[in-house]
Image 1 (cartoon, one colour):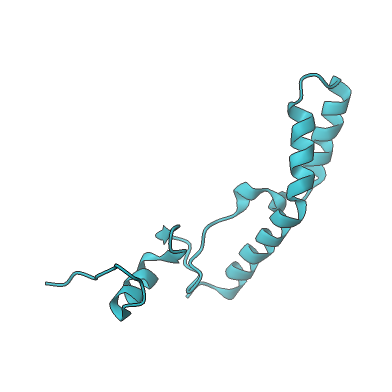
Image 2 (image 1 turned 120 degrees about the vertical axis):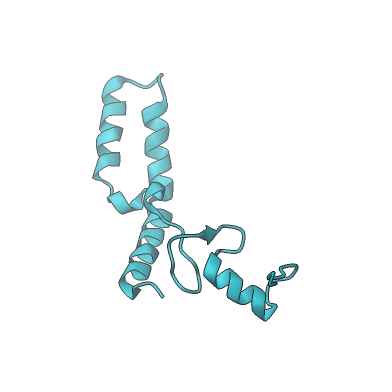
Length: 101
């Protein structure tokens, strides 16, 4: 089990990303528009820099929804390899059979 503080920090980042997504997209659109004047684009880049760092989607990290483990994460199931193995052994993932010999 991951530290509670790390799990909560990740949840906080997720909330910030959702809160500022529209504003960040609008500012990025202005910045990338070559037809706009350079001053307006520069002001937009300054406004983008003023937004919280954690509101950027690149700062998110995938974590297992059961344990909070950040490594060996399966995107399709949203769990780590360890949790997937336990769920597979319990027969809770359809089509998954844990091999043993």
